[in-house]
Amino acid sequence: MKALKKTASNASKTTMKPGKGKTWTDKVNDPTKEFTIKKLEKDFADMPAGSKMLIATPKIIDSYIRHIPKGKGGSLATMRRDLASEYGADYTCPVTSGIFLRIVSEAAHEQIEKGVALNKITPFWRVIDSQSKLIKKLSFGETFVQQQRKKEGLDL
Image (cartoon, rainbow, N blue to C red; front, side, top):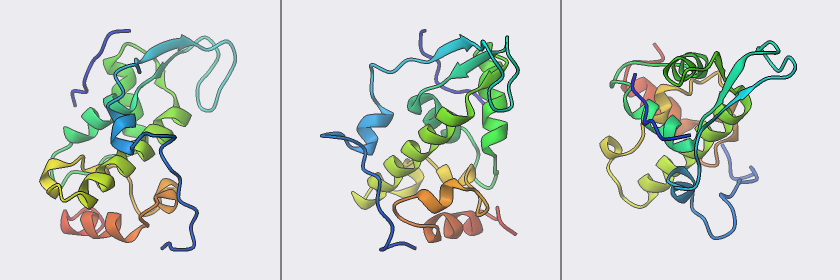
């Protein structure tokens, strides 16, 4: 899947906000954010020292997810492998990938709340399954993701 390349339930939940004066959508589309590739000096998560690690951007994650066809599911692990390969790295950072997937998901839901049609937003539910740790952190809860996955036949 081709990602955008750039140069160099829940009322009781505490909702994460996107930051002072920014919407989630602003965070996805921030033109000052660029990907980086870092050589690891020591082992980190599932990556050995000496590896090249991609630190993507929310926009790259958004573009990747938009290319997943309807009815096809993916995973964070698969997305990380695909992006590392596409950007010439050995791995993609698991920490920032999870954070950026959350930003993309919150931005998409923000668009839904503004009346944007589902077929015009990023289908983040194709990457977040019902067992994901991230699903429990979403400000809008798990139900929406589960409903969308069911509609696309992803959780049968």
